[in-house]
Length: 397
Ligand code: TGC
Ligand code: FAD
Image 1 (cartoon, rainbow, N blue to C red):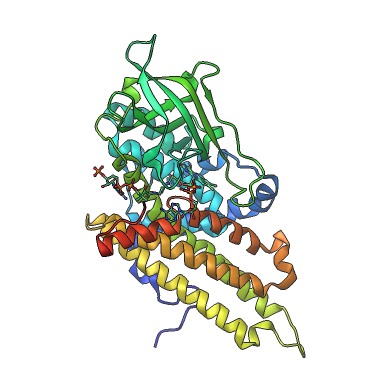
Image 2: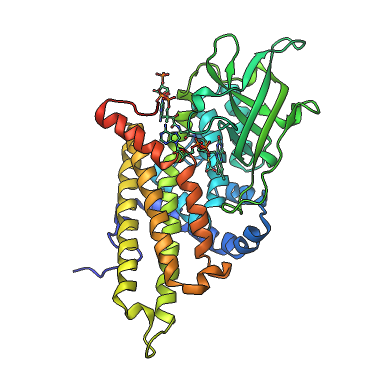
C-alpha cells in the first residue's frame, strides 16, 4: 500500500497535471510567504491593501483561465487551485481576487466587445486596474431579477446612458477603477451590463462608500455603489447579452472558484486543529489528540475536505470539456461552503478558550466561511436551484 497522507487523504494531487501542480506550488508559496504574515493585522484593522492584486498580477494569478489579453490561459482546475491557496490564508483575500478575475475579467472576456477586452483585460491582469461587480441591491439580494437600477438615454450627452440606483455589499467597490454594473435598460426593461469607469464620472454622480465594522471578511474591502445619473458611453455597455444570463454566467466561474477555495480554509483549520490537539495536554498529561472525540472531529473534517476537493475537481474538468451545467456548480458551491463552515465550527471547539484569541486564526475562518455560504447565492438558494432541477417545480416564489 501507499502511505496515507492526512493532508491529501484521497490523493487528489494524483489528478492534477504537472502544470497544475506547478501553478499550485507557486500560488501556495506566495500566499504563505507574502499573505499569511500580514493577514492578522489586516483583519484587525479591517484593511485591504490593493497592492495585493498587483502582486498576484505579477505571478499571473489574475484572470488565470482566460486565454490571451495578458492572461495565463490555464485550466479551471488550476484556477481553483489558486483560489484554494489564497483562501487557505483568508477568504477575504480570495474574494478580492475572485471579483477581479472571475466576475469582472470573466464577464468582459465572455460578453465584452473586442475593444473592451483590449482596453481592460491586460491592465486588470496586472492588477493595475481594480474591478468590482455590482449586482446586489439594498432591496434585492437573492432575487436580483427585481433590481431597480436603471439606465436611460442621457438627457444631454449624445451616445451616453445615464445610470441611477444603488448597489450594496459590493466587494472592492471603494477602491475599484472599473465597476461592472448591472441595470435595467429603461426602453426594454431588460438587464444589461455597463462598465463604469470611475475616472470618467463627474463629481456627485458616483459614490462608493465602504461598509465598515464587518464581523467577517474583514481583510477584504466591501462597499456600496451609489449612482445618480452616471454618464456611461454606449461603447461601455456589453453589446449582446441581456437578462440574468449575463451576471449569472460570470457567477458560474466565481462559484466554481469558491468551491475549491473554501476547501483551502477548511484544510488550514484541520492543520491548525491537529497541531493544537497534539500539543495541548489535559488529564494525566495526555495530548487532546489521544481522545476519541477529538479524533472523530478531525476525521470528519478531513473526510469532508477530501470529498469536497474531488467533487470540485470533477466539475472543473467537465467545465473545461464544455460538459458542465450550472446545477453542478450550485451543488459543489453549496456543499463545500456548508461543509467547510460546519466542520470549522466543530474544529474551533478543540481550541477551547484559545479559540477566542485571533492569534489562533480559527475564529477568523469561521466568521469568513459564514460569508462564503451567503454570497454568490446563499446555500438555501442553491438548494432551490437543485430542487427545481430535480422536481421540475420552481419553489422560489
Ligand atoms: P431564472 O428564471 O432561474 O433565470 C433567469 C435567466 O438567467 C439564466 N440563468 C443562468 N444562466 C447562466 N448560468 C446560470 N447559473 C444561470 N441561472 C439562470 C436562465 O437561463 C434565464 O435565462 P433566460 O434567457 O431564459 O432569461 O431566474 P430567477 O429570477 O428565477 O432566479 C432565481 C435564482 C435564485 C436562481 C437566482 O436569482 C439566484 O441565483 N440568486 C442568487 C443571487 C446571487 O447569486 N447573487 C450573487 C451576487 S454577486 C456576489 O455575491 C459576489 S461575492 C464575490 C466575492 O466577494 O467573492
Ligand atoms: P436575502 O436575499 O434577503 O436573503 C436572506 C435569507 O433569506 C437567506 O438565508 C436566503 O437564503 C433566504 N431566502 C431568500 N429568498 C428565499 C426563498 N425564496 N426561499 C427560501 N429562502 C429564501 N453582491 C454583489 O453583487 N457583488 C459583490 O461583490 C458582493 N460581495 C459581497 C461581499 C460580502 C462580504 C457580502 C456579505 C455580500 C456580498 N454580496 C455581493 C451580496 C451577496 O451576494 C448577497 O448578500 C446574497 O446574494 C444574499 O442576498 P441578501 O443579503 O439580500 O439576502
